[in-house]
Amino acid sequence: MLNPKAFGLASGITWGIGLALLALFALFAESYGSSAISLLSTVYLGYRPTVPGAIAGAAWGFVDGFVCGYVFAWIYNYFAAPRA
Image (tube, rainbow, N blue to C red; front, top):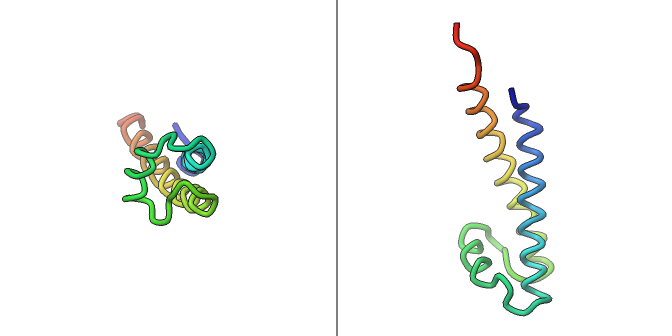
């Protein structure tokens, strides 16, 4: 059984850090990941290859990752539970 809260937190932290790093890499490495950022900015408001954009991406990524991770763990537990 998976703990939905723990799995959600792990997913949210991982996705938030990943989005922040992608934005910072694009800021300092000139156009690295710019097409991915263009695509993701249509979903995550304020996400741009800037420091404030990286913070916005980290926040949105944490929320999105937490919700998706929590739901994934809940569905997994539902199907993995022994049936009587």
